[in-house]
Image 1 (cartoon, rainbow over the protein chains, first blue to last red):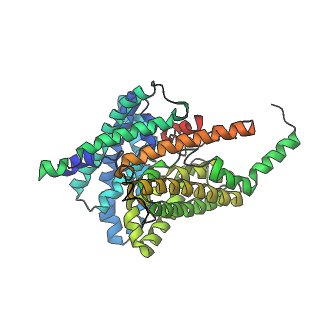
Image 2 (cartoon, rainbow over the protein chains, first blue to last red; image 1 turned 180 degrees about the horizontal axis):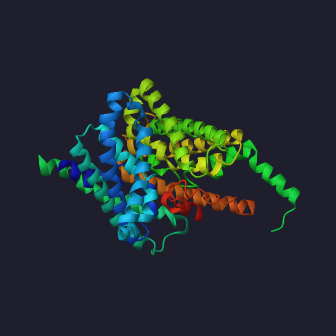
Image 3 (cartoon, each protein chain N blue to C red; image 1 turned 90 degrees about the vertical axis):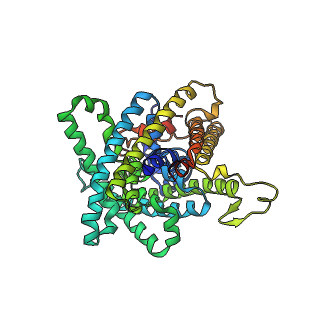
Length: 192
Length: 248
């Protein structure tokens, strides 16, 4: 529970760890793509954690190959994403239509690799790791959801010439990130 | 616009000269402020100038190394599997950096932590591999790697310095006069929201600078190139925010 809430609210991947910013800025333009992307991220995060955790502890560690972590993880994630895409296309066409186009983009989303590595460095148990992945994904969804709302307003606003486009978007993101500071201390006070 | 073939050749040659590539990387096509690539580590690392510079050096190494190898292998790697091949090469170099840092600079390792392995998915490296190293000669790829790396480091340093001075009142860990007595450091700049904020302002100034240069030269500055590396960044320009940066 603590891990879940802290991953969603306090240590939000996007707004406090800066993972997945690229896609965050890219797809937050409208709500629909934002939701599609975050659905895909949640899915891939869970699947990649379910795969990389056993690989680290059952394969790399016993063989003393821990240093290959980065290399192996990125390849596993890339392969996994491809596979999910293919399976989804065959078995669940409606879901594929909703999430499909976002799947290839996810390989280079640092949040996915980030959560896989973070689970290992924090030496979570398998269950904790899965919960962390779920929380990370939901946190990503939440911030993307909020931000795409903010952005639809910002894009229509009349801003100074030099601030148009990316700068004002970043400043808006900064304000959204400030609001997430409201959750600091939430975990300690709720669960202790 | 019609151009004499000779003239065009000359222009192309000029464009390929090492000096030109270098300047492009550092200034006119600065990966961060102009192409808006690789912003994840940028925002996370730049809480202090020291972190920023060390991250910059790591990225320079990875960029040069992987561009070098990729441009050597560019004729051997089949087109269809080039992205996985590039990622593997890049991941190899990142692992080297990771091992070196954890062996010789353990303190740095703990402060950069997660973000070193994440160089693998840094858009800059893959984008340059795809857009430059897979097409150009070994030498110009090396120069491009160096230029882009230095440009990235400069941007990191710039932001790191701003955030450290304003947020903590120090510079490379040294206390600055005035700060702490006359001016109270503002925590805001060290915290994540400050990262977004400073970056937004920096981009704003870089846009003003580009406009000013355009006016001065009387012609538009060589447009930051269309990011032809759509696939490199995972299939869509917009994912990296890359196209947005260039369109402005």
